[in-house]
Image (spheres, one colour):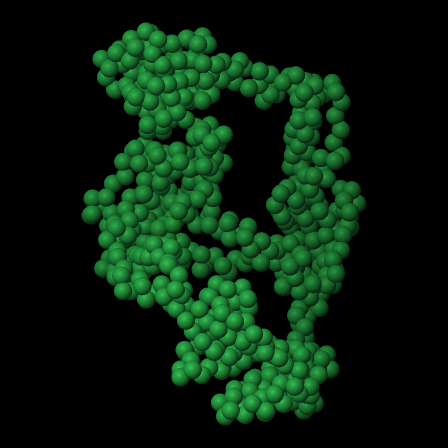
Length: 613
């Protein structure tokens, strides 16, 4: 809904991480305030301090995103690098804030309002919704005030970059030269050799395998391994065992009826005017039969709704400013109000529709009720059972725990510290336990709890030569076959330079090779592999009507011989010239922006207390 008629959302406040180059803001969540850290300073920038509370509020959500992305591959060792990155982002942000203040850059409420209302994350049926706005912010741990400050800060900092964009330019000669290079075409053919096709032609000497084993012996070992028994307690399994009668469910429905009741909603249009004289004039026009939509578009001072004929959509109590709400909820459908004065000005309200409060019947709510009841009861049981589980884990064997709690005793196969099939927490704890002890209750998330016990443990051991002989043989054969094809490619190029056509034919026939004629290509052509196209455009132009032959390694298994026969400039007009110019300017601007950050850091007094992070 409209920020101009809300008394709760007047200031625009939030918190936001800005990197070396200002990036678009995305809602990923932010932690709640941390207690006990507000007085701890983790960095100072030109006498401006960053508290640990502020740091944690930035660090924790980034850490959670990293954990979700890496899943079981996440390791606490990543925290150090992440902390360093976050604090440097915060320092850069403060430096940009200070620069923006010196340059007198500000973001107006109107600019901020327009940015937020244009965000599709807050839209319902294509229109900005205050309810959706509050819900998204609440879900992500924000208050409107804190979120709106972040947006204001980001917009202000972006002004620095936009000023660079406005002042940046590319010389016409530069642009023409770049465009010609970009549109250039090249004619080529190539031979492709794959090392895997020549494995059978290589023979690795036994002594070479032994020598490699001795040189790299420390690389060939069997990691420490464990096998564990464990029991799991989960909300999902507890819920399956809960039963409820219709009588119990009906009683629960009466207790929770408010949950199934929707608030009364009203849909209205309004015209907002700053002075009473104009407001009375517009009200008179409406009473004379004037078109509300046209008058709203012409006169309303509410930029968020005037283009929508003053339409505010449906809203419930507690959303609008009090004077507006009191009048709107006292009106009848189709009624036009007198002037309503609020802190924003004078409103003329037209009430279009009323959706009365509605309560779902027991039958309609039964399925949802059953789920809520079951989950609620299971959650209560889970709390008690985890306490029992913790006590038994301390006092009993794992087998006794499983029997007393009616849980299944499960086992794993042997696994090492790099196993991705085992939950990361279980993996970590498994290698710290002694053989005769249970673990504490481990919270695996999603209301799952386990206790585990080591069943078998194997120490790390050196692998003997026979165990790794096959592995080493395959590796060395791959190296030899790659060297073999690189030698063939080099010979083809040498014969070509010497004009020895017959030697080339003989070599190609012997190794079952053939030229692939590709013809003319651009840089984005799909006639050949992108890696091959890239190598083609790295080669120098042919001279004196000849061609350029070159042997190129693409990766560990592939080598190509490229015959570049001709290069030509495109004769086509360049409709993408403007896009190329824009891309180049943005690239140069980004480079300038990075340099600005570096300059600001070099001239600022910055202290980062890494031990406090």
